[in-house]
Length: 204
Picture (cartoon, rainbow, N blue to C red):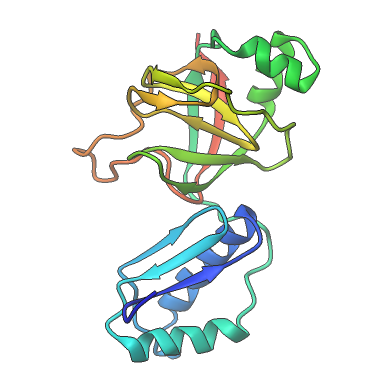
């Protein structure tokens, strides 16, 4: 990826999460003599090691990564976040049909699941959350909505996500939260960051 970055391609989001942890560990190991990247950015099937000083540093990282083995355990554990949800989403019935269960069972299963933030993207504060134990896949909407309200909790493919603000979107909506997903004034603007563990609970 040019003179200042290297892109690691992996098989799936879980591998990307493990690779991110590996890269952060290597960067923190002074004995390796590796340049510290400005950022390590996971995506669905890639990890970008960005902001290296020059081509020699890129090659040094390439050499180390060619022999490195991701750490044991498939997930990177970060902060634990609980998000309260009002389960009144417009697409609960759609998800229920996809999961072959009742809308009430969708709510129960969603609350019982533990999610891991695999990566962020699409919009500031939007986190792609994977269940640590697989849930049935949910198809995206055939016609995306022009405006999804901020705080909407949606499902699409194998992911769960929360819209940080009003924007177009094609995910199936199961509820809404008042949690602030992105605030530039906070020390950590995004509530959900890669590696975070997320649980959803019914709002009182």
